[in-house]
Picture 1 (cartoon, rainbow, N blue to C red):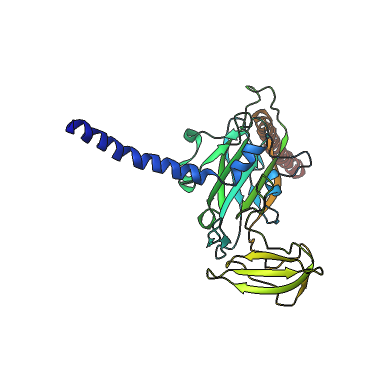
Picture 2 (cartoon, rainbow, N blue to C red; picture 1 turned 30 degrees about the horizontal axis):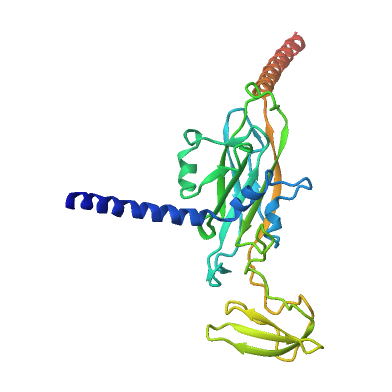
Length: 315
């Protein structure tokens, strides 16, 4: 019996860290890309807008760099840059201030997909250490998402991509294609359910006058607004937000009582890439080679003609 109890205790001791680790990882996974994956079959709307903009309301820049042209079945890099001032802190879900996370999405033409590890260079694997890039879904493996990841060390993300081969995929052709990219930094202002996050300014719920401002023990504030009928509405102001109104101020409904805590935002951009036919390149090389040889023969013929003319003058 003692032996069995010892075995059970040892098994429990080994299992608990694993259960805890998995639970922590699952909690961390509930970040911005997964919201889009759960709510939208296609992250790019008919208007061209990427759905991340539905929750991340502020506009911020994002850029993407890709080669001008690629060959079939070749691996190339799409470099996405999501810049921001890493000295800034955002409001976290618990009301405290913390570092910003970033997330990105790259919408490739059909047939283009994430390059397998054995076709990705060691240098790229090293740069992407700690970054997990995944397809948007099984049906949309040409759409790649990443995040949330710490932004202070990953403002530049490298997406290793493999180009399709028209000889193997009849839906792919040697054409110029568009690539769309979206990148966000920081938390959103609206959850997919439509509820506001705490990453918003606190607004007045009625027209009226600031009747009372009370300081709480936790550093927060309670602002009372009285309307013309004498009704009073209160607004809870967390300690992390700066109050913009003063006692006696007249405010309108939906007017901001605090500064806007949001320092992040979402941006989207697009670029183009050509899937080049190797035969065209080979034909161009042959053309230039023929042109070069023709030029050489022309020069030799000209030199020969000049020598003949010189001999005729001497005689």
